[in-house]
Length: 237
Image (cartoon, rainbow, N blue to C red; front, side, top):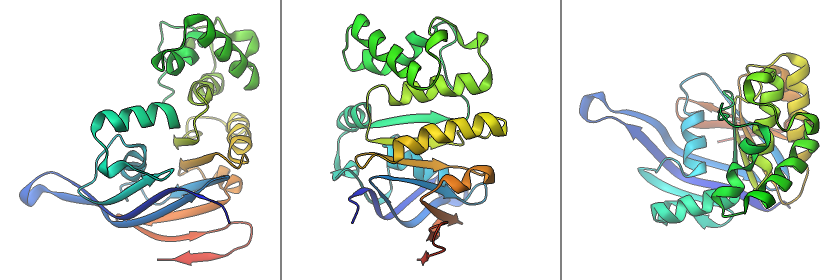
């Protein structure tokens, strides 16, 4: 049985005060396993991105527990969560969030420099990762010199360069055509196949559903059910 990478128990999160308060997450119980690519799907506004932020530790919870690799994020101090996130989590977004004044190798080096790596070591690892995602000949290009698909691959290289165990993706293919979306997903599929890695993707893009090991469906701030696209098995909460 695969080891649990992420577990939330009875997580609640709301925004606002008084009559204007909105409960976004309602007693959410969620699990993701090592060695899998899990997609989190559901209608807009159902709480997917909020849950992703809670798992990443960028958003605290009102009630409930959040464990990532057995670390109780809900009990850690802000500084401890920040340190944990820097060492263990990589982020990929729909908007590539590359720094426009930096070239590819400099953008990819950023997580390593944050961890204290020297510029030379960071650039060596960044160059190797850019080669892995097929951009070895464009390491000195700035983002405005790249296509959307190429920029997303730079973003993937940046997310993976510090060797995180959890990769969190928010609509990573929504802005890409089918060819570039497939290329991105093949990279993420390869990462998720490692037994010591976990990839969680929030998406509305039904073109990429076939890459999922499991799909967890959210509705109205709750987990509705989880299914396995290959076997057809469904686990309902």
